[in-house]
Every structure is written in structure tokens, then in C-alpha cells.
Length: 431
Image 1 (cartoon, rainbow, N blue to C red):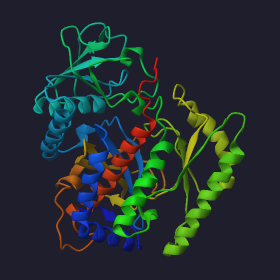
Image 2: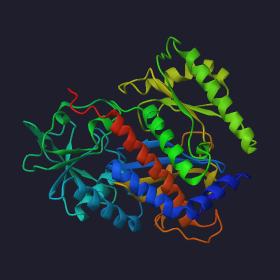
Image 3: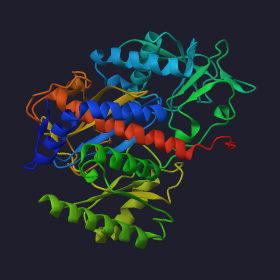
Image 4: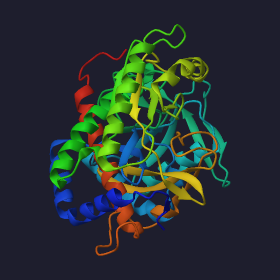
């Protein structure tokens, strides 16, 4: 099933799909050579937007939740990728300590944890959950919607090792994005693998750094395929020194919004796209889709400043509220049952392990779909994204469309590896 693409301008995306399929051996060799020089993030998920004339990532998550949205058919891929990732890091690994979000007891998130436990157990590891929640003083059982249960246990720090009372792991897998800072428990660990590294968390990571890396990757890839990198890259720039309460920095923000709209109008004219461009402004650090704003005219920023005070107030505790990312807006013209949808690609190590569609019936094609009320449709990725079907008409084959999505997802994952190398503090003191 390829979701209905509502746009008269399907040409460029179908041409891109055709070019990607024809170039598959060169693309896979290119990725292979890149992974010889760069280490992929342990796991990641990428939100894509397909505008019909442009396909681009708009967010890359290095602490993905939502593994529960993958279909059972996808789990063998995830298990295989988990085996490869663990073997590369710690071949003799026996115990894996999974550290979830401290305060999240939502049923969807707990189901995500249960899926991760299942994946890594099937990969040959003893998996237990150690909670950063200080209210967890003893093993605590939490029920899941399907009738099963998880046990959260208090973390124990012994000198430079993190463990549970009777469980000493060689590998610690974080599923908390560190939006509210880095707990002391996680600092200065020795002889244990902490995945992802601390600087991958939102306490230090910035979206602008990621998209700078992605711009570099997209240019390399576009050169390989002989295409315009704009077709897969959303222009992105950071604006610092903002204070929405006092209005400080709004002039600089308005100038960048105006410049991005002007650039986009030029590209639309070049490609004969008869749509009104827009810009998305979002916090440069942070997650869960909070504080994301759509702007079609730089003049709207005056009214936006008032709304932003309310929206950004929700983000207290998240660092760098004074810095935002101004990003060229990429509409999503995909629909499932008339509702706006966007593909989300899931990866572990360097492999695509599946994905799903995020669907929101109450949001428009130029709005953020990562919001309350969204639902998930895994059907579209039911077939392996590794096995395209050569010879099929572009836009008509689900395996081909999702192979292409997997390629763009892996480009974002490669950009994340560039980003983490650039921002690695090495022996820097986190405490």
C-alpha cells in the first residue's frame, strides 16, 4: 500500500524514486564506504515529509520511542540489527541495562519498552530496566495494556559502574533523551558502554548541528546521483539570543524567516511549483514536537511572539530556549483515509528495521504531526524496505517507495554520526 499522494506535482519524487532504484548498487556501496569511516548511532528514528516535489527529513531522534508501532513482521530485522550492533560494541555482552524515561508511565511508552526488552532478549541478552526516577526505591511492577508487566528497579552506582542490586551490565542503553539535563548517575562511567553517548542527549545536542551535518551529507549524495540536493534537504539556520518575553532578538529571527522564505520562493519558481512556501520555527533543542510553529509571512512574527510565550512556557526545563531553528517548511501531501500522514523510519546500527506512518486527522499538511491526537499506521511498511521491486512504475510500488524512504532515513542517520563525531567532548567533564 502506497498512501495516496495528493499533489499534481508528483514528477520530481517519482523521478527521484526511479533514480534511487537505478542507482541502488552505487548507493549501497557508498553507504558501505561511509560506514567504514563513521560509526552509526546505536538506534535512531527519522521523521520524513513527502511534498511530492521534495522529500526531506525534518527531525532525527537518537533516543527513539515507538518501537511498539513496528509490526511483528519487522521484529526479526530489529533482532538481527541488535545482534550486529551489540557484537560490534561488546561481543561477550551478557547483561543489558535499559534506562527508560524517568517520569513517563504512559501505556504507549511502556509498550515501547516491552518491545525493546523483547528485541534485545531475542538478541541473546539478559535485559533489565533501571529507573532514573528517585521515587523508585525497590523493584516496582507496572502493568501493560496487553496484560503483561514490566519491572522497574532502582539504579545503583558503585564507584564508576552503574548497575542494579544483583545485576552488573557491560552495556547500558539509554531511552531517555536527557531533555532535563544529565543525571550524576550517568557521568564518569568506566568500563561500561553507555549508548547513545551523553552528548547525543538534548542537554547538549542541537538540531542546527544535525542539519548542518545533513546538508553536507545531502550534497555528497546528490553528487553521486547527479541531482539537486534541495530535493532532499530543508534549508535550516539557527537564531540565537532570543527572548520571546521581552522581544529581544525578534528582528534577527524575522530576517532569517524572510531570507528562508525568499530562498524557497526562488526554488519553487525554478521547479514550477505553484504553492505558497512556509517556514517552521522550533526550539533548537528538545523533543516531543513542543513549541513548533508554522509561519507563512515574516510579518506574522509579531503575533507569534505573543503565542510563543504561551507555547514555549511548556518547555521549562529544556535548555537553550533562547535559540531556535528556522527551517524551510516541507509539506506532507500523503494521506491515509483522508488524514494527513508522514513516514517515520526506524533504524538500529546501520540498518533500516522498519517504520510506520504518523497520522493526524486534525492537522494540516504544513503543521507538525507529532502532537496529541496522532495515531500510527504500520501497514505501509509491512514489506521489507530492503527489497525493492525493479521495473515497477514509480509511485505505484510500496517496496520501492519505502526503499527510497529508507535511503533518506539512512542519510539522516549518517548525518547524526557526523554530528556526534563533531560534538564529541572526549574527556570533557560532564559533571
